[in-house]
Each structure stands twice: as C-alpha cells, then as structure tokens.
Length: 356
Ligand code: NAP
Ligand code: F7E
Picture 1 (cartoon, rainbow, N blue to C red):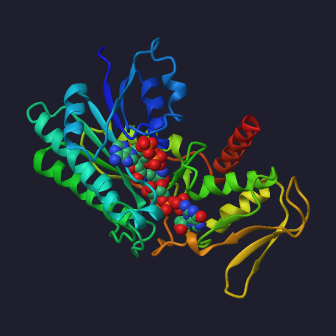
Picture 2: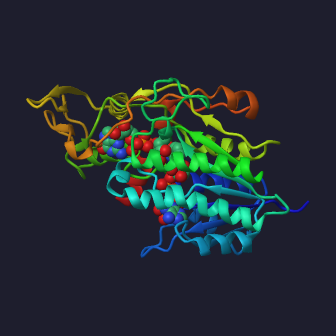
C-alpha cells in the first residue's frame, strides 16, 4: 500500500517531535518544516533524523509560515495527504512583547497554509488540515469547564491570534469544503517542553539549585490553574482528529487542573526539599528551605515571586471537558499529573548528569 504523506509545520517543537515519531511508527512518509536559525536547533528530532540515510522516510525543508511563497512551494512540492500546522510563537507571556509577530505567525500563518491548500487542492480535495488550536481561546470565559460549546474570551495577543486561526480554519472548511479541523488542546508538557514554560522552568530551576548552579527560582503568578496533560498522548489525538470521516473541532484535555503553586509544591516534595512559604511586606510570596539538601542551605530563599514574570493580563483557571473526544475519537488521557512531573524530573536529572 502507498505510504501516506504528512507535512508538519513546527516539526522542531515539542509536539512536532512526538508527532513525527508517532507518524513514522504508523508508516507515514514525513516532511517537516524547520526554520533557518544561526545555530542548529533540531535537538528534539535529531534522534529520529540521524539515520536518515538508512530510513529515508523523513525529510526536512527550510521554511517559515510568514512567507507565503515558501508555504505554497512546500505544499505543492510535497503533495501531502495530511498537513499539521503546529508552527507558532507559542509563548503567551512573550506574545505581549511581540504581538504583531505573534499575529503574523499564529494567525496569518494559518491563513497562508489554508490559501495554499485552497489553490493547490481545488479539485481533488485530498489534503486534510490540522490546526493547533488552544485552550487560550477560552481565556477567562465563564463557561467552565470548557468544551467545544463554550464561549471564547482570549486574554492575550497569543490567545487572540489563535482565535483567528480557529475561525479561519472553520471558515475554509465551510466555504471550500476543505477537510480542516481544530484540536483545541489544553496545556501539555513533557521532558521536551521549552525551558521557559512553567513546568520545565520549575523543574530545571530546582534541580539547578540542588547542584549549586542557581541560588533562587523567580516566578510570577502562583495562583493560575492549568489542566496539564502529557504531550506524547496529546499528539495521538491530533492524528485521530484527521482520521475521522468528517472534519470537526475537538477539545483535548485531562479534565483536572492544578495551580502553579501546586506544581511547585509537588516538584519540591518529589526531590525531598523541606521548606516553608512566607510573604514579604509587598505581599510577594517566597519559600525558605528548612534544612540542608544538596547545595541548598537551611534558611536559603529558594523560590521568590518577581514582578517580571507576571503578565499584563492572566488567564486564571483553565479546565477542559474532553467528553466529545472520548465519545468520537475514542481518546482519553492516561498519564496523571503526578506521573508527568515524575517523568520530567527524572529526565532533567539525567540531563544534568550528562552535562556535569
Ligand atoms: P513549540 O515547542 O513552541 O513549537 C513551535 C514550533 O513552531 C517550533 O518548531 C517552532 O520552530 C515553529 N515555529 C515558530 N514560528 C514559526 C514560523 N514563523 N514559521 C515556521 N515555524 C515556526 O510549541 P508546542 O508546545 O510544540 O506546541 C505546538 C503547537 O500547539 C503550537 O502551535 C502551540 O501554539 C499549540 N499549542 C500548544 C499547547 C501546549 O501546551 N504545548 C497547547 C495548545 C496549543 P523553532 O523550533 O524554530 O522555534
Ligand atoms: O504558564 C504562570 C503563567 O507559560 C502557565 C502554551 O503552551 O499552554 C501554554 O501557555 C501559567 C501561567 O503556559 C511563571 O502566568 C507563573 O498562568 O507554562 P506557561 P501557558 O501560558 O498556560 C497553552 C494552552 C498554549 O497554547 C501555549 O502555547 O504559569 N507562571 N510564573 C509562569 N509562567 C511562565 N512561563 N514562567 C513563569 O515564571
């Protein structure tokens, strides 16, 4: 049987790397789009790519979703059955500093891919398109827990840019009968998560402190709540969304949420640090160690809130209702929050040993 061809925009990211592994295991031929950078940044996929001469079923192409001619040319040349648009400026905090670039990538980038599909695939209607939508489109909407029927109220340039992509994906589906679907994914993490997202930042910081490489971990809002799942199982849902007879939109979540402080407490507990939370005169919280542990000394301030890490606007409480995905996709999350954090701590400890 002819191999299916997938094209992944954003292959070098967390989800791109897991999705590539998943699709190669399903015997796909995978094309991935990587950006030109001054230093090579394919670390998340190097382990798959290093034997490309033996396994020529993964090809990387230089590209950028801010460049229509490039997007058009890549889609025309690779002739894919499935396109996964994972490319984005994906950091919510950074989107306040780079609002226009975030819109160019996270909104118009999606439009560029859809336009290329509309023009190139007019007759055959063969290409299936997956859009990486996000729980950030719900923002601070009152309709909790969030499902496909909840109202949207994004609270950042990122969430707003992604809401445009959600709608344009739906518009192109309805107007041009393109198989275009949104996966509305809640937060998902893994040992491959970018270093400045809260889960990985907290774990790296605490392990660094144990080894004397960092004195204190500075954080922002400790009371935001997130529904955190494992990226590896969320990419399976992305694939399942494109295997349906009809294109549709699905919430992918765990249905449980925790605060940032719960996350920090869990990591500290798991690595065996005893500590107490206190408040300074301005109301900022900090944690003080109660005994020596590794390079951490008794009475050391190990965590401190710093206003640099507060956002101009916050999404306070995200929890998803994934019952539609469970019913139609037969998908449900299996990895608990505790298991996810345990795996991330284990991997970070191994990384640390390799570097020292
Ligand atoms: P990620 O690790 O930040 O990966 C983003 C990918 O997009 C990277 O490969 C990045 O390339 C690429 N990219 C960025 N700007 C681009 C551009 N202008 N042109 C082409 N590629 C570009 O994000 P992720 O966690 O894997 O998430 C994947 C997608 O799902 C993103 O769209 C994100 O917004 C969305 N999402 C993520 C979550 C989550 O919790 N992880 C939840 C909901 C939705 P570089 O490696 O060169 O930076
Ligand atoms: O923040 C708070 C912060 O950056 C989580 C992206 O994948 O998921 C992700 O967006 C929470 C927020 O993820 C720090 O204010 C406190 O409330 O890990 P995060 P995010 O903003 O939820 C959604 C679904 C996406 O689609 C996005 O692409 O943690 N927080 N202190 C902090 N966050 C960070 N990053 N750093 C801090 O120091």
